[in-house]
Image 1 (cartoon, rainbow, N blue to C red):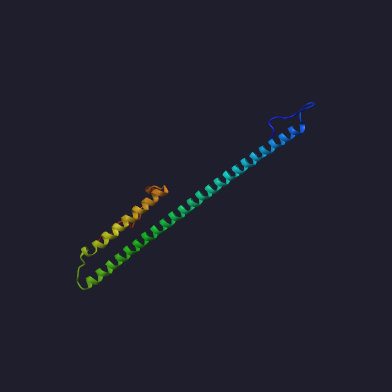
Image 2 (cartoon, one colour):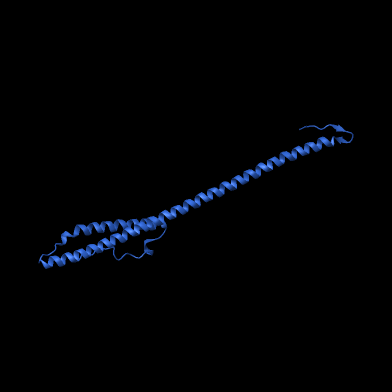
Length: 152
């Protein structure tokens, strides 16, 4: 590209000026093309990043829901086991009464203590899950089976 143009009868040589302007236009077009490519790459990178974040959020929510469902299933299982234990205790008393034996509450207390500890642990897990989910424990009704029935 010339920095100076040759003089002709009426000023600069028009073909040199036209060639110079054409070369400047080509350089400018090249920069515009590069600018467009960079902008497109940034848009595509942002879209990809948004998709990664959205997919991660979906996976986190799915994992949280599965954990909550498992926790609830465990809680139901513990409640069933407790009910079965109560039923067994009732039957055991009937059999013992038939043979004029009295059941000592101390036989069942360690089992009830373990059930209470397990219920406390599950309730703390539920509270942690609710806390992570942004819910307050006052929004959830208390489980009426959470206290251990310790009647003789």
